[in-house]
Length: 230
Ligand SMILES: [Mg+2]
Image 1 (tube, rainbow, N blue to C red):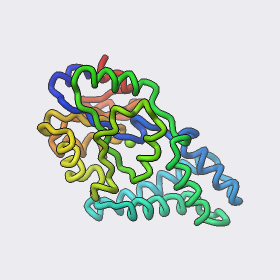
Image 2: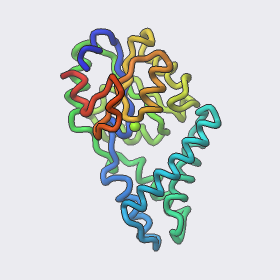
Image 3: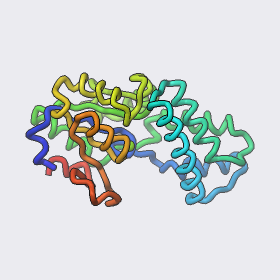
């Protein structure tokens, strides 16, 4: 993907699934929370329930033209957690526990090749930023990761923009923070619809991070972050 870099002046990264990963994984954390509240689910059951609930909430946001807010993010996660963990003895306590858990930097890990990549891009004069469908919890997570300090000056969070990816207003905010032309901004993310399609529809360049080779048909695609500068 290094061929793209001479044309770009700014690189913005998605957060979850691109630079940041739940550690332990989300299914493990959900299954443990469920178990403590009397519900025993296998990791596959958690995964399947989560995906179904997550997709339903994606549709809710699509129907609302991707409008979001801190309140909507809170409600969205409440629906996803409550549906995923249907059958627990105390859904409210369970939700609050999980919502708080994912606000802690100790619940996350950074992609191992992120720090070297960000340093290398900065050294070559590229402006860096973060563009995430998340909420104010992202700030407390970032505090715990000095490896991501180079991104902190330009952070676009959907709940504060008021529109989430793949909505065009989200990417307009990215372009404005990048301070250059749309075609000079490269957006890197792991979600085909939200990151890749959203960014290209808004006139940005995009690269899909596709570690499991699910989208071999996408022309601008990497399986590891480091491939951006290989
Ligand atoms: Mg992602």
